[in-house]
Structure formats: structure tokens, C-alpha cells
Amino acid sequence: MTDDAQTTRLRRTLLIGAVGLTAVALAACSSGAGTGGNGDGDGAPGAITTLDVIAPADPGGGWDQTARAVSAALTGDGLVDSAPVTNIGGAGGTVGLASLATETDYTTLMVTGSVMVGAVETNASENRIEDMTPIARLTEEPLVIVVPASSEFESVQDVVDAIEEDGPQVTVTGGSAGGIDHILAGQLLIEGGMDSADVPTSLNYIANSGGGEALTMLLGGTAMVGISGVGEFAESVESGDLRALAVSSEEPAIALPDVPTLQDEGIDLSITNWRGLLAPGGISDEERQALVDVVTEMHESGAWTEAVETNGWTDAFLTGDELQTFLEEDIARTQETLSTIGLTS
Image (cartoon, rainbow, N blue to C red; front, top):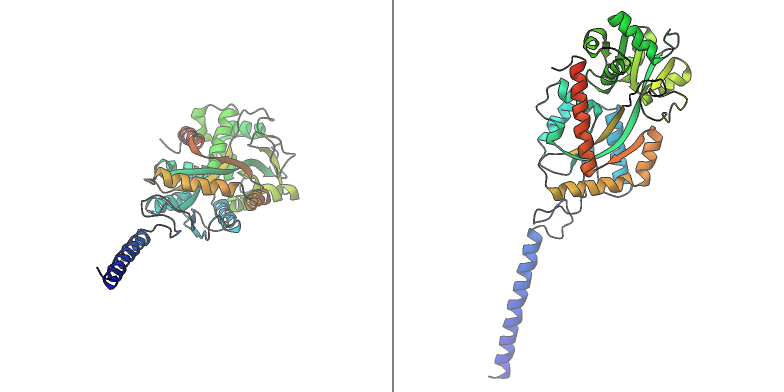
């Protein structure tokens, strides 16, 4: 074989090899490998670059504040590139829950919490928290029982005794029907000594969309007792417009450190308004773990620590099996209480 023929054959061999390598590279690109998006070609989650955050309430409330704090912490510390917040309000969060049920992208998180647990039951929601994928419990906030400054009630037991004696004449106001405020009112009467059978006819609870409306009723004299998150009433307590009788947590509230707990007042009851994050149902274990990992990183960030302190929240971080157990127990306790106070059968 001549030198020219050998050279020609060598060139052909090199050309065929180059074409083969190019084809392999193109196939890898088309499958999504190495593109750095929210997933890769084999169905496993890749690096999460965007997380959509749903606040299942209108702007301004606790869920909205939590959603925006999550968004700011995720992006502020560079854990994701973007985390836009969408408000989907209505029916104690169950409208947002229905929206989450239709999501097919696992990179969607929705704020949830105690109020939604009750709303699912009272609204007989087709979509349930159990159908979604729990990612984390983030915070909890004590509730506070307050009265107008001029009220004759000096203790929580005074309130219980008055309701037991006068029934519906004692008006109690708070958040949505079946929500955490309403649940505390019912449990307070039972733990305070009232027969559970008498609670549905004795408790005159006036529901509102939030603590602002309840405050207006208390200051206007159209409600005698108020129950809401500490953050809703703390300023009015500090100004002297309201008197705080007790907080619902095991320890004194950060925002109202001088107010006794219910246990201090001799009532063996502890309940808090917790908030956390859900993902769509039906996602893979790998996708769930990817979300748990990024939320865990967020929880450990300086931006999130600052948000918790600024808002007066209590850190209550929980994931995994412990979170699942907590949810099951909270849902069962809520179902029992709502049935006792006559809101569900």
C-alpha cells in the first residue's frame, strides 16, 4: 500500500470517530444531562433553580408573611435563583390546597398550618393535607386570650365560668370558623371543667377573616373575649387597650413575656399555631428529598434566622417521619375537637 493510500485511510478513520463522538455528545445534551435545570433525563431531580411558593391566603396575613419570608431566605442566600410567591386565598386555605393538587411540577411549595387542618374538616374539602407531600414544619406561634381593658374578667377561669353560667351571652371572637382560634376556645371550655356535651350550645364564637377584625370588635364592645396569634394582639396589649389573660404555649411568649401560660393558670392545655410547607402529592422519594434538603438549608441560613426573630415566631423545624407523626396526631386531635364543639359530625 502506498503512503498516499495509508494517509487517506487514516483520515477516514479519524473522521468516523469524530462523527461518533459528536453524536454521543448531542444525545447527552438532548436528554437534559448537565443542563443544570430542575431535573435530568433519567427522571431524577437535578439542582433546583426555581421554587414556586404558594400563599393560600390574601396578602398581609400570617401565611403570606411566611411565604414571603421563605422566598426571601431561599433567594437571599442563593439557594435558588428565584422563588416567586403567588397568593391563592379562600376557604381557610383549601382553595390553595385544591390548586396544589393539580400541580405536576414537584418544585412547588405551599404554606400550610393549623388553620388549614381545621378548614379541611369544616369545609369537607375533597383535597386533604394527607394527599399532598409534607416537606417541613417551620414555625409555631402561641395564641393569646385577651379582653378589653375595662373587662370584668380577671382570669381565663373567669371566662370559662361565665360561659358555663351565661352561655351565648359571652361573645368570643377570633379567626375563621373551625380554625385554630376556634379550636382553642372549645378546648379551653372542656379543660376548664365544662361538660363537652354543653360546649356546642354554650360557645358563642364570632368568626373573622383575621385578628384585625377581631380587634375592632373587642375595642368596639361587640365582643367580650378575643383569641388570636400573639402577633395580632401584642401591640394592643402593650398600649393598654387590651389585657392578656394567658398564652397557649408551654413557655411564655417572646412578645408577651409577662403573660402567664394556660398551665400557669391551672388549665392543662397547650396549643400553638404552626406553619409549614407542602409539595404536590405523588412526587417521587428523590424529589421529596431534594425539597427537604433545600428547605433544610434555608432553615439553617442567616436570612431565615433573622426572619424568625423579626416576626416573633418560634422555631419548630421538623421533617421526615417525625413530621408525618406530628401531622397525623394534629389532624386526629382537630377532628375530635371540631366534632365536640359541633362544627363537624
